Image (cartoon, rainbow, N blue to C red; front, side, top):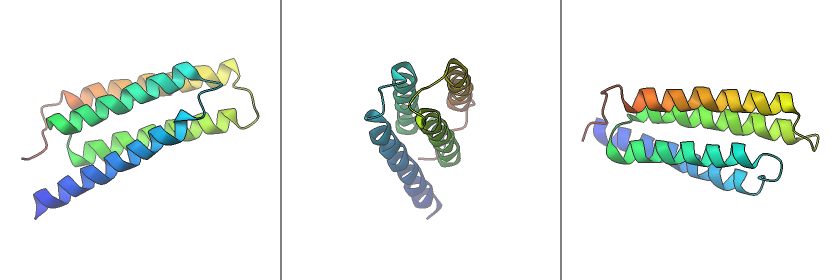
Length: 113
């Protein structure tokens, strides 16, 4: 039963991640590099789930982090212009998320099969 719950939990987190990708696709006007990097990070998370490198809890945390970055980007675009400071902040957030993804994928914890 626990395995089924974890599998469902990971699937729900991935569904949220996919929805996030679809939601940011149309907003690529002001921050194409940010959007491209966001999509790449989401792909890395999906690959980690598929390979079992990420547990359900890790997946949920990384998905939540990606949603936070997307909200920050949306907020930065709200006035119609992303300032250099906002862009640096987004890049720093993505660098932090990238390190987190790598750490979680290589921490020897695996999703039970």
